[in-house]
Amino acid sequence: MPKPAPTKINWNTTDEDKALIDQILDRAETMGHLKKRNRINSEMDISACHLNGTPLRLAEWLHADDFNFLHDLYGIDSHMDRTTGCLTRCFVPRFAA
Image 1: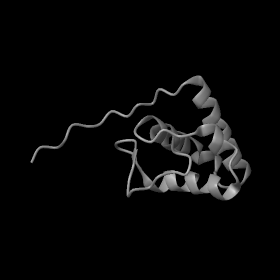
Image 2 (image 1 turned 45 degrees about the vertical axis):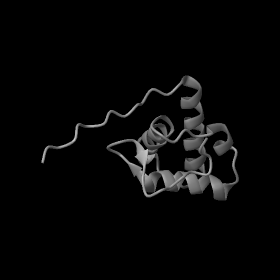
Image 3 (image 1 turned 90 degrees about the vertical axis):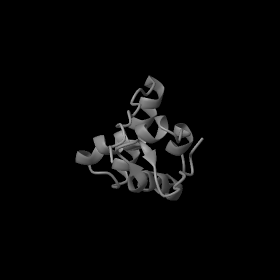
Image 4 (image 1 turned 135 degrees about the vertical axis):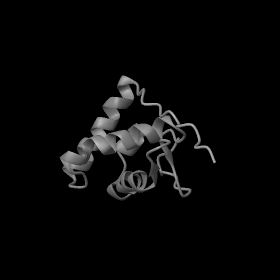
């Protein structure tokens, strides 16, 4: 059986979205829920999610209460298919658009 063609993941964030994602990661790091060495992985997961099927309300997520903020941070990390850039197992972030 032939392998399916690889999926191309969109990585083209706008400057505004990139700045919001950086602020989300800063907050997660400050809260102690993100180790600096894992930051690039989380940045890629959030960008992939936002640009490949599950647009996010980034500004609202940034200013969410801690419980809902962490729900999406950990949920995206746990449910990201890193070959497609899409979320799996029916996970929908609270701040999905």
